[in-house]
Image (cartoon, rainbow over all chains, first blue to last red; front, side, top):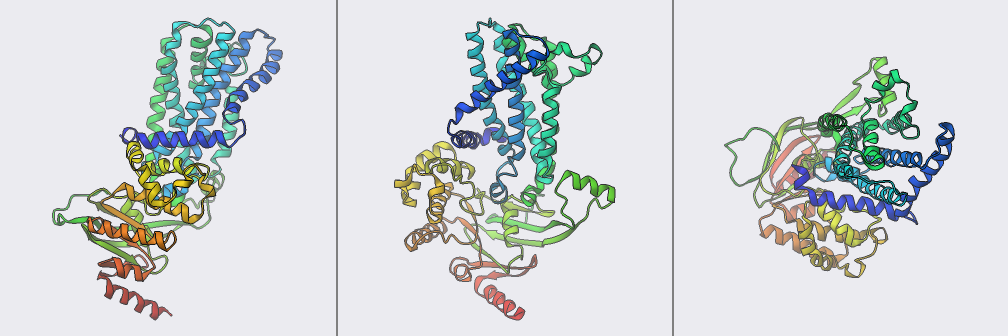
Length: 253
Length: 258
């Protein structure tokens, strides 16, 4: 298995990604933490007015949504360009191409974990009661990572052949932002659409995160199984697509 | 790298290339975008590309410990052949096999990141070339002293001259210690003194019976290093054998074209 055989390369590539990302701006790594907080404040001001909710719970509700969503967008955006942005490597050196995608998504996960750490501090400061359900957090993050990696596998291999995919993905992500319960409570969804609405695995993941971080309860077991199955399905599909398309990477990049 | 096992191969073979053909697709209208692609389907020109036969039914064997040259005019398929051997490209027909640890790169310095320091780049580049972290740590001082860049350890690569970058690349790459080395164009990387070290290193590798496949336009170097040479033209083998007559043949067909 290449993940094990090339673990040193994965580690070095991931750390290099992070170094490059953080040293190219003055505040570097601090930005990635300030950014979601600013977004939370703005969205809270706007949407607490719209939904007439003004409790601190709702601000945290939004923040969890944002941090979760940010991982998905940054991972898929960086993952998508991971093959195309390294034409030299793809054309001149042999190694499993999946590594480029994997290490990109992994570096986004590490950034995201730092954001979650800040979120965690805020929860403690605001005295939200943390329960033992927090122990589920690593498992959920792992499933979430699998989903983001699977998306990135598919996107990165398609992007080699279709160079405007990033534009399309941008629009889809924009739609996704409002299709997921990030800035509004799920209660605003009309009853008759709720079943369809809850099919979205990202929605379910956000709800699980809120259960374990904010509400301090265990999520329904079925929800966890449901997103795991999605992860598995997407990984198989993403991997299949990538293996089919990687054959001409070195020619098309 | 794939294909049926073949019993008639001699055990000394380092590289076997068996009936390899490679086609490249050249789109008639570049359809790189989803929009253009969809539009193309409606117009009915879905698979509108020409095929260009870069390599046509190539078969040869490189023996263990041999230095093997590949020469030919531009566009004759030399680099394509090297990429197929390295596993970077996939053949459409036939197969290539390498017996022994094959160096995964065909060009030096690809994989360096300009925004990282020399130190960070040694680890990055070394890992890309397949070295383990502890191997790099072990060889770290040797890499720096060989490339004569000890003073610049913490400088970003973007501030390096091209000669310095190339020296660092070569010094790192030789640590991979492969059984088979593929080189696309010669390593004319530094000043005279460093070039001398490069030559020494390559001679040392030859003595250790490292198989070297060497693509070049520098016929003098091919003559100097390679015992056998392959002449390619338009994707076909024109001649293969001892270096001198093959180079003569190459010069002859070049003259005929003029």
